[in-house]
Image (cartoon, rainbow, N blue to C red; front, side, top):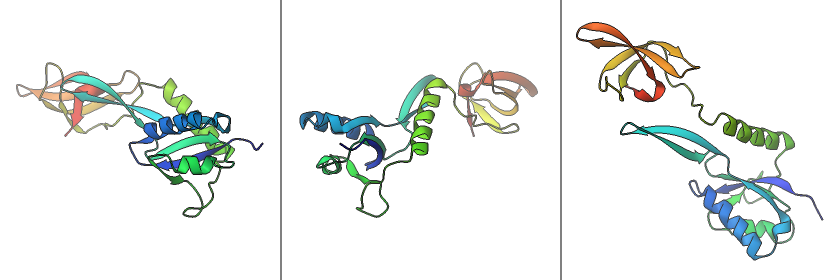
Length: 180
């Protein structure tokens, strides 16, 4: 019995979770569970604001790719290739033999997933000092201002806004402003 390796399966973008589900169900149906390990679709969280409300959305970190731990013996590669939404295995040549991922790549991928779950709410800082932004939430909704300071720890911006002809500093969080 050969050992299980990690493989990259190319899928239709946007169908990664369905492909994962289909693979799991097909292997249960065919009673080939012993040849299948984990199936991972690494997800990343992004925060969006719509109508002043904060929404958290998850999307695949690697669009169009599903990571499958499997023992590719007998019919297993054919079963995976014939799953709805699967394009092919990642290989050196088109239609060639699937190449297992290297240990380093697997550890990096799994490490990134762990990191993503730890820093669940951390979003990159899309602003720079001196940039002009529009306030989209709060008492000063609709005002434009210039970023004076960025406080990464508190996730706040100090924005200088012109109110009644005078510059006034406002402390706003990242979600209350948008780029112009």
